[in-house]
Image 1 (cartoon, helix red, strand yellow):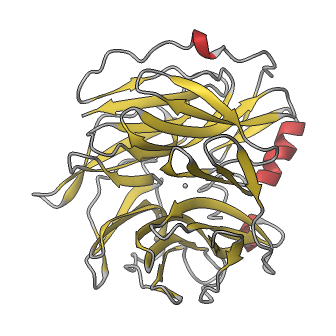
Image 2 (cartoon, helix red, strand yellow):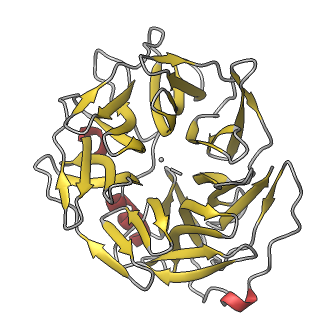
Length: 386
């Protein structure tokens, strides 16, 4: 499954991350976490504990073979096949990008990604066809990772936050093209045509970014994100649609006066059943925000007023239940959609600073990855068993 606004909303870009590392800190999910530098070896795969016994309706922590670092994305093919990408902190200035694999019993390190990959998003078409995007794009063919450089964008360096694959063999990535700084970024999308990444022409929506992608079909793709605030306008939700020929902007619901809105996750259940989630804020803290597409227009859907409960991702589990997860800082939140009452309700806390989320095909299970709420940059994975 598959997440600038002002710095209060989004993660720090890759370049500031490297600068922070040089100063003895590392950027994680929009926070600079400084403290003791850890440079020891990670636990060997054979030392990784097996998953705890499954308990239905609860989130449970699952051991990972990384002692210090960050996990940024997760995707699953089944309850016995899942992958996660992220980083191991090797020293004050060095990160090792890596991929983990779940075999139904435990997480082990499958591989390391090319240097300076900085993976932020993950798309798994099969065990031998995986894309990870971040500072650049990398592809796994079942044996090794190969860097596939992104197309040059005249608006600036592309920093992707999302990737999705389609049934025609293509892959799509979205984020922002940054000329000088995040606040000057503009939304950007590129497509992999089997040979190279190609920059896509987008409507002029001003400064902003795209944080998520979902595909109904090769000619029916949605991208969600944010149009940045200006001196005279608030931050607004941004929704773009691909019809097989061109990208167009589709209007998102207008918020109240002085209310900022942004989107961080999107999922398609059908051409006329698409959900996008994010956050909103006016005078108080960030609140959850959700919108729904019925084939004709986007409308707001009620969410519980949870302080710092902004949402990062959304997806439907194998049992048909729709979930959204997120949070800010030490607050983490999971929402479950009540189809009868047509509203979102708060569910059990995932218990992790959420960076990535996925549902599991043919299963009611869910995965979240990120860092633990306690400790200094401790990678964390939690699993919900439905």
